[in-house]
Image 1: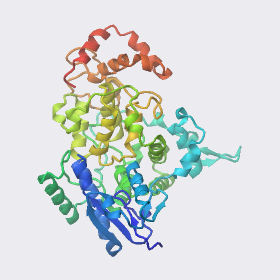
Image 2: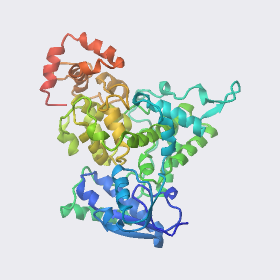
Image 3: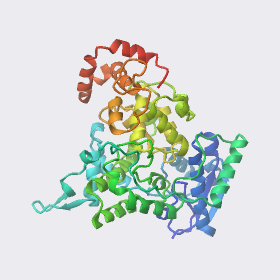
Image 4: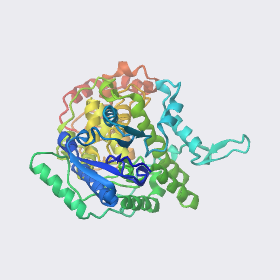
Length: 498
C-alpha cells in the first residue's frame, strides 16, 4: 500500500478505485461556475462525492477550490489515469514540478492496451463496434460455448447479437410495460446540504443551472448503486432486450437499467454488472436476447466509445463537421424549454431531460439527435449540450455517440451511414405520434410531420455528399421519385414550428 496520497476525481468513487491508502479529493466548484449544467447533475456530483468522503473518514484530505491545480500543484501524488483529455493534460503539466505516479485507467471491461492491440493495422472504416464486441466476447468468454468440431468457442445461441429479437414496438393496448417502479434512492442530510449549497451558488450568481431540481433519481452511493443493480436484475432485465428500442411517453424508464450514472460515476464496476447479469441468465428466467443485448451495451458500446475518445484524439469534436452544419442550438434545447415545442415526441423527451437530466438511448438518437441532424445543428454545440444536460454525460462518452453516431459529423468513422428517419419509424417504435398535431404520413401542409418532411429535405440538401455512401442509394432513389419535393423544400426552409 502506497503512502503517497491518491488523487481521486468525482467519477472514481467506487471500491475498485481505492486500494486502501491516503486519498485527496477536490470539491471543484469552479466547474459549476464555468459550465451551465443540469441542476440534478451538479447535485449528483456533490452528493456522490460527499457521501464517499463520509465513508473514507480520516483517510481523506478534502479541499474546495475553483481549479484542481490550486490544490495539486507541487505535490507528489498517485492518480488513476483520468477520463478526459483535459485532466490528462493537467497531470502531464503537474508532473513537471512533482512526482506523479499514473496508474492504468479503471472502470471499463477492456484496457487501453487491449484496444491498441485490436485497432493496430485497421483502417478508420474497420473500427466497427460489432467487430470490437466480438473480440471482447472471445477474450472474456462472455456467452461463449465450446465448439467440439474445432476445439474453439462459438457464441451461445449461434449468434453474437439478437437485434432481430430486440426491435419490438411498444405492446399494443398498454401505456406502460407494466413493470414495478424502479427503486428510487432516499435523500438524506448530505443531499439537503448539497441542495442548500447549490441554491446559494445560484442565488449569488456564482452558477446557473438547467432543468428542474430533485428529488435525486440516481444512485450516489455504492449501496444505492448495488440496490439499483439488484432492482434491474429482479424486475427489468427480462424485458430489456425486446423493448430496448421502443419508447412510451407514460413509461420513461421502461425496462432500461438506469445504471449508466453509477457506472460513469465509478460506483459500479462494469465487470461486476456483467457478471451479475450472466449469473441471472445461468439461473434461468432471463432470455438470451435480453442478457446479450445488455452485455453488448456495456462490454461492446460503452467500452468502444471510451476507447474511441482517446483514439480519435482531443480535436475530434471541434474538427468533425462532415456535413457543414452550423445552425446554433435552439432555445428549446439550450434552455430546456419543452413548452415551446409542438411535436409530441420532441416535447416529451425534452420534458424528461428537463425533469431528471436523463432519457433513454432511442430518445437521444432517434428523437433529439435525429431532429438536430435534419435541422443542421452544429455538432460540437450539440455534443456539449449532451454532456451538460444529461446526468450521465461525460467528456468521453458523448463524442462518439453524438458527433459520430448521431450527427455523422465524422463522415462515417463511427457509423456507416447517417442515423436519420422520417416519422414512420417514430410511429412504429414509439407511442409519441398519438395526439400529436403533426401526422407522420404527411410531408407537405400544416400538419406535415417535421421528421418526415425533414428527412427528405436533409437528403436533398446533402445528396451529392451522400451519393458516395452505397448504403444511401435506396433513400436517394426514393428522393428522386418525390412529386412534391419543391413545395416540401420551400416549407422546410421556412418552418417555424416543430
